[in-house]
Image (cartoon, rainbow, N blue to C red; front, side, top):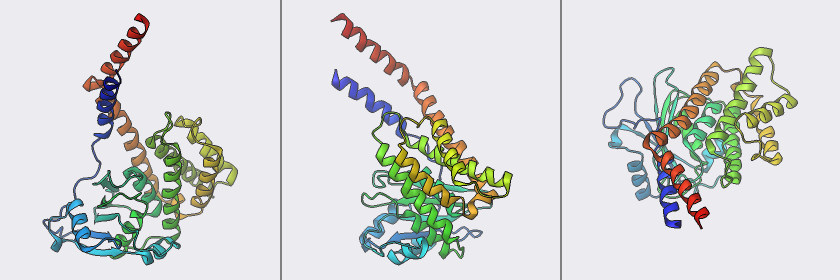
Length: 313
């Protein structure tokens, strides 16, 4: 009986994992004459062999058609305003290609088994805060890492492309990534929690803060920020999951976020709308795919059979 339960659970989880990725592979066999070469930013904790393997994992076909940059501990301090300066732990790497105006951000993790904690939507959410836009990003690692340092690689790629991001926003974006990851890890084993719900909460809080600024010409105060947080948590059914301590962490994050240029950016507003729609559509597609495959009916019937077997005894 246990084996049967595990079999059905495995099939269901497989359906949840096989969700289409939003980003396409980045072309490196030819040079895009309009947007130039993609930039391969590799972690300084990698040796030469690992750099080559990372490039393969990122889908690089021709190194003559990419610009290569190393990201180290000094970059962490430069782009985040803080850090240990430790280069040896910087493993996760990125391939970044600029795209046309209005294309937004597309992010794909090519090695989800090695980026153990951060999801593509978390990266994208934080990247929007930092001011990243109009690019395709692929992330990979040759060994298991949390993935929290990948944002630094994205910032380095932007810098190498001649674009300067706002330091204050980059710092808050990194804090956002770390805070949301911390909350996700603390709740990952709770049955009423999913990372997509948390992503929607973060998006919704930002949208409420940005809408407030647009309507009032000034930032929301601390009391209003807390209200936005609690209403967003309730809206996405996490009120029984998110603790008061975690609400305090979100309060700290968003009282800093409200002071950045992200609150009055039309670009941020549009990207958040797109991301919210895509996260919502993804959840709906998972359910529909499971329904179309018949797996939901099979699971329901399976547990009906278990109940019948129990009561027969």
